[in-house]
Length: 49
Image: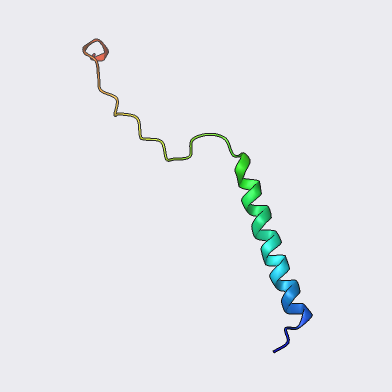
């Protein structure tokens, strides 16, 4: 079974684009998780009218 050159070209393009996308995400900064929501604000006795 022979593989057409266009099939090889498709495989190469997919591998190159996949590698580039993995390398592009390595430099991201910041939290790698979803931060927890801050606690709900409660009224202090001094804030009441």
